[in-house]
Length: 217
Image (cartoon, rainbow, N blue to C red):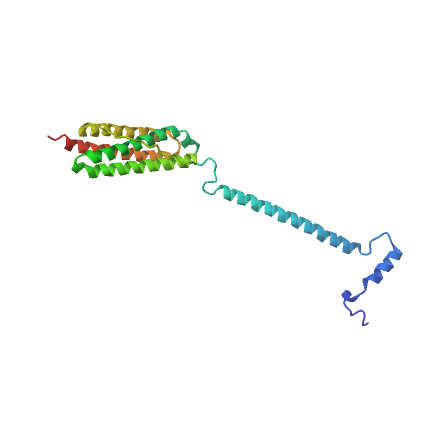
């Protein structure tokens, strides 16, 4: 009676193994238990497969998330291949802006006193345009453009003829910037070119007012 109250864990199963081996040596002593153990092992393998699948899905999700990070796209919607098609045009604009900056700096040194403040501002704005276009060049190509050093004096004309030349240059720049903005399919580049167009027309208006004062006799 006392043995029947004992827990199964205290039984010596080795004795039953020996008996089973004498009765049926070809069979496993505990087929049900083994099947249960195999089932647990298979379940573990399946769970491992689910875990591996989950890990693969997590890795794929991480890759997708990383591909959405700024700068990860090899051909972004802004300053990408569409802007690359305008690269030669942008280099032409950059050279024109640099030439304008040098011209205004020269005019400021030998122009009338009343015009020097305006010319200094125009030269500074031209320098800003140069830096913006250089930044655009870097965004498109990934390389920095080295500035060309220009020696010698520019704008050796008299005061009014020099202003007249710069007026036409600014007005043409405004038109060309607007045309380029309409031609490109890059939205960011189009907006930038539109801003430069408006700035060039503003420069032309300021030159027009200086000419009005300079032509007064």
